[in-house]
Image 1: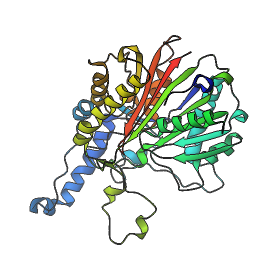
Image 2 (image 1 turned 180 degrees about the horizontal axis):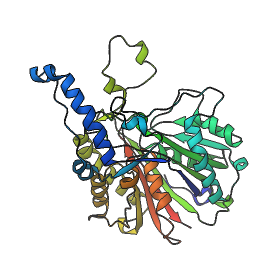
Image 3 (image 1 turned 180 degrees about the vertical axis):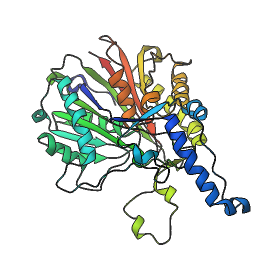
Image 4 (image 1 turned 30 degrees about the vertical axis):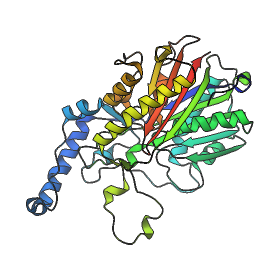
Length: 378
């Protein structure tokens, strides 16, 4: 959709929370090597009989070549690197305590509001979009709304790695129709909680972070730096190639599930082959609908999942490989932070653009889902 001039909406601030601990590829490899060797010994008979396959050992060179990832930030490091645990060690919190996703959201929200020149009291809508929510209800968005003393309303949504762009369109719609005046979009991703650290193909993929954006009608904005939303476009197509079956019905199911079904899993080769052309076509069609050509785009802030995917998608739009300046990468430092990735790229790599420059924020992932937001520096 294209916004009419009377209802222009702008992104007026962004914020980023970065967890205090980081894990290198080398650290992950040491942990998974110990875990894998132990598993292969414990399952030697089944491996010999062909009942199960021997688990492959991890490799630093493979990680960097396959993904472009060098490290990732995590909310809790010791549990991730414990070969007997292989997942974060998070303390339970009582109902009277602030939830962990709301806690990591507050610094990001406050940074975004400061950029926008707004106070917490100015906020009248909070939308939380992320791959995994810590509970079914009450909504994390409502908890954040309460923690910052905002009015209005809030809700949670999940479109996996596309949750940020889908949330941005929901915010744009709310501002256009008058149901909100100042919307905060928050993406609190603790992806290490649903990552599979036990298998070579998956253990390096994800990291934790939280992003926030402030959106307002352009006529109301007071921020010194503003990004007018020229258009938004969303698309989904069902696929089982990226899947996580954790849910409230698990305890009611008859029969036992493989525990690996209740965390992240994917058919990486199929995802690469199917998602890259889908996203490139989506972006190209979106630009055409706005009477924009690929050469009109100063920068692409793409979902940070895999370096080769980003390069191929940008090539599909531009007709050539992008430069680092045209499609900046943050996944080497952050790894895949799900919905937060494209917003981190936007947050980190936009200050050098000048008024009139146009860019595309784009995310894609499980579903399949893809969302693009075309913005212009004011």
